[in-house]
Image (cartoon, rainbow, N blue to C red; front, side, top):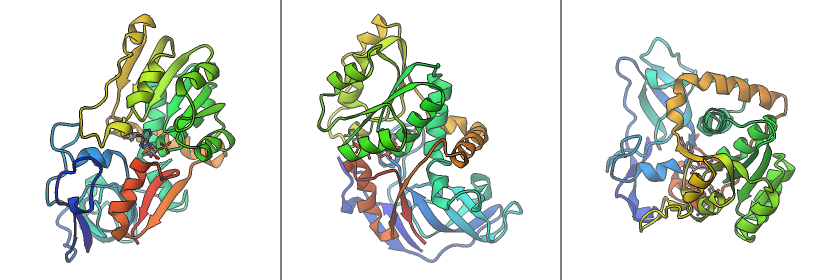
Length: 330
Ligand code: NDP
């Protein structure tokens, strides 16, 4: 059983020395546990946060522990009557080839309904994040203007498509002409701003003449600060993530334009997808239906080989992933 363990708390971007690549015999499942052969792992920006010491919405990964990661696997031994050998399950197996996990942490997935990697993207955590963040926290109204950063990413691409289904005008922000073209041509966004080559403030002013009603923030930093200057009255700013700040070696860059919240009677609100776990079924039902009807589309960026994990994870922070980043383990 090959595994990646956290060897040190990274400073800045994770380095090869922050990991230890170990090999161990797979253990046997105890009462209520199952042994899972890991097929696909979800690589998420949040993993960078889990490597840090300190208080968060979830405890950090301990030094020497197998790195936490969500994933899809096949049950190969079961001591939980709810799961049989051969079941395909979604859970948090960690970055390893075989995992012993409590059956309580697993949900069964239907491989006939969608390709397995989709259960880590549109039908998985990013899908849940886009769905509940936009609909439950943002509450988009018909005709409102929604701006989303990380627009070609796993969460952002879905946010924009769901907002279109709700009758909104949607403007994305993404890095590079290819990603912007994808957001407009394939995801149906009304416009997309390439923050690497355009003046974001000027472009947003042009694309959002009535101001921004909902800004779904995946990146934080300067882009958040610029969006704050373009808010419409009663705007909602959703703090989903701040990937531009995750590898900072200095303090997080906070918004200096927050007085716009006062002027525009606006609000800014953070949310964590895990709070919606009891309601995931609602989102999966809607998203699966929209997928089947061709009303939403999603792509995965699949890289093979557990040994590539340290480099593959970095694609997220370099903007090299195109769609939901997935590591194929077996
Ligand atoms: P993505 O698929 O969007 O991949 C990350 C993308 O972030 C990159 O491709 C890159 O796109 C962009 N990026 C990286 N560095 C920067 C930077 N310095 N400035 C601007 N953009 C940057 O990832 P996810 O969809 O999985 O996650 C998106 C966000 O949602 C993250 O912030 C994540 O932490 C957050 N999240 C929050 C959850 C919650 O419960 N609150 C749950 C799940 C995710 P580009 O090439 O366009 O720059």
